[in-house]
Each structure stands twice: as structure tokens, then as C-alpha cells.
Amino acid sequence: MSGPLKGIRAVEMVGLGPGPFAAMMLADMGAEVIRIDRKPASGATPYPMQGTRFDVMARGRRSLALDLKQPEGRELALHLIGQADALIEGFRPGVMERLGLGPDICLGRNPKLVYGRVTGWGQDGPLANAAGHDLNYIAMSGMLHEIGHAGAPPVPPLNLLGDFGGGGMMLAFGVLCALLEARGSGQGQVVDAAMVEGSALLGAMIYGYKAFGAWTGERGSAMLAGGAHFYTTYACSDGKFVSVGSIEPQFYALLLKLCDIHDPEFDNHMDRSKWPALKTKIAAIFATKPRQAWCELMEGTDVCFAPVLDMDEAPLHAHNRARGVFVDIDGVTQPGPAPRFSRTAPEVSAPPASPGQHSEAILRDWNVPGETIELLRQKNVI
Image (cartoon, rainbow, N blue to C red):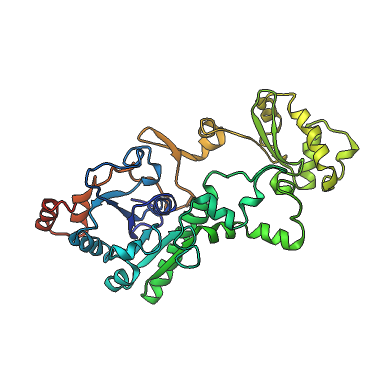
């Protein structure tokens, strides 16, 4: 393993969404993260991608399949947690406690442990035990309301804001903060990451704009929401799209120049009353040429321009290829580790593992005697 987190050991209680994403981030940066998969009686899984090379968020970690309902399984999990720097779990509040693996027990076994938890609503509060998904959490944070077009319902932004930005990334950040603190104090603690709070935090600037009075009007009318003619996307003659973000005056002037616009109506680009009409005029201009023609004219200039690429096109773009934004792991194209480091370069150490693929190897490496491993196998604990 390589990367700035080399030497950190973590245990991941395998779940869905933000937990695996946070664990992937830590593993990408060089941490040794072992996945504890639930051991289903039949060996089947309700998630067909799990355990295949397409389960991208499972990359870089070894897997131990463990029956946590058996006392030996619980004790084995505690043995591993006792040697770890951090634990990551993303179940509903109370699930880990019912398994006998709650914070009190784990921190009792390992006082320096950072116990990372991620849920939608948080570990307490009126909604703590309610079911939900990304869309519900960003709805509660105020962010979903702002995304979409005027006069239309809010548009779900995939599950980027709740699960991954507001959930997984915040959990990874919180775990690393607690690990740094534990180095000085010698004490672990619980990290409570909630997707409502994380997605609200991602909107810090927008809430500031609103308080200042610069974020008003209906959905889709604000500058950064696509209301401005100089900060939006346009369709080209071939049905493909481009993005334009010419906010600053010098960038806006270049946009007008390259679009051959001399209409004085465009002079005051911050006059919100003119935005709808000016957007219609520019849309007609962009519709006269295919996307590639606009790329040849604007890409790499200070217009603040980029083609809107689909997921087949993005890995092939010259800039993304030069930077190595995407990598191929076991025949699956996927985003590579980020961010970059000048000295301790991270890399993906292994493709996704199938549940239980490394059970015996993990236990040997984490100081479980061979005779104990054999007994656990005979009892169908692993």
C-alpha cells in the first residue's frame, strides 16, 4: 500500500452508500481497511453488484464474511476492532448496539478507537429512527429546493449531495479529524455524521448569499442555479450540450466576442430582469453549431467553458487523460483516487473483493491463531 494514510488500520462494517464511500476514500489514501461482510446463510446477496468487479466503492479492501449473530462472530469482530485505529458503520441508530458492537463496548475494548457513524438524520432527534434516502436528507437541508428549473419540481442531483458529499466525505473527514486528536489525547471518540447536516454544510455559501439578499426569487432564477444567461448550459446543433460560466466581466466580454455578439442589451450582464431574454438569444446562437465547433472556439480560453460530457466521453477527454482522472481496474473504468499528493502518491491497491474472499488471510494478519480459525470455520462463523 502507498499513500499518506499508510499505517492506519480501519474496520468497515459493510453497508450501503456513504459508509463504503468513506472507507474507499481511506483505502485509496493508503489505509488498511478490512471489510466485515455479513455472512448470509445461503451465501446469496440481495445486491447483485456486490462482490463483483463493478462494485467500485469496495475497491482496495480485503473482505471477511462473518456471522455476527453467533457469539464467536461478535467476539472475533471485537478482536479486530481492538487492533484498529478506526471503525466505520452506516446502519440505523441502535443496530450496532443490538449486535453487541456499540461504541461503549468497542471503546471499552480499544480506548483509542475512532468510532465513525453515518446516518441520514443523525444518531438522535425526532427522525433518527425513520427510514430515508439521499433525496429525503437533501430535501430537509434546503438544498433540493434550489435545484431545478423555474416553474418545475426540484430535480434530484443523483445521490451526490447526500450519500457522498454530505455523508461519505463528511464521515471520512470526521474520522481523520478524530484520529489526529487521538494522537495527542490517547482517547478515541464517536464521530456522528448525518447526511442532513453534511448537505446543509455544502450549502454554506448559498445560505450566506440568501442572508445577504443575493439569493432570491423562484427555483432556477438565481445566477448559480442557471438563471443567468452567462452561467448555464446550452444545446448545440447536434443535440449535445456545452456549459458556460462567464461570471467575471473580463470572461463575459470574451464570451460576447467569441459569440460575435454586439447587441447593447448584453452590456449590463448583472441586470437580472434581462436574463431570460438574453438566455433565449444566446441559446439560438449555440444552436447554430455542433458541440465540437464550440469546443474548438472556446475550450481552453477564459470564457469559462467546458463541453457537457457523458460518462463514456469523460474518461476520453484529453485533459482527464493527461491528469489520470480515470483508471481501469479489472476492466472497469472508474474515477481514480483524489486529491493528489506530491510525495505520498495514493493508488488503488486491489479490485473489489467478493464477500469473504480474504477471511483466513485477514485473521492470520490480525493475530488470530490457526487453530481458532479452523474452529471458526467448522462452526460456520466465517
